[in-house]
Length: 221
Image (cartoon, rainbow, N blue to C red):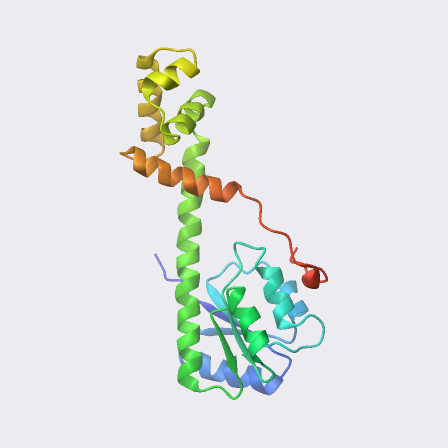
């Protein structure tokens, strides 16, 4: 299977900076895409290929911090590396708390930039692998029957077969059969593994926190 090359999305209103970054990263084999504003980047959404963002803070329209805040609502958002000439400590603290890989100031040292980009790409690869595994878990769970789901829930809650049989008004032998089907369909061999999958399903079911008031002006469709 062919390897998909990552894409570095450079979002900056300074054309000379965008071009310089494209020359540098392009020479190292990266594909680089340029955007003059957060709005232009959002018009290109969704971003399906692996990659990361090199994001300025001060730009016409929504700022880089506002774009980052909007993207935190999306599980498929690429990691962000800030690169700005107007950074300060409060900005950097806000950016890092929201999950930025790094907060670099212009002019930036070549090695510092490349290290941040490589870290961001590693983080993106981990995110994508995690999403793939969660999708597999959801797909497996969807194959369970209603009764198997009821058994699943009680098994991961730590209840014994006899207790589950009583609560579901059936015999223990039937519960053992359902339990075996659950383990087979979920591709696990122990209750501990099943509990781990249940935690992943529960986390997926938790709704994401809505955007804070200061980012309500910017949303990702």
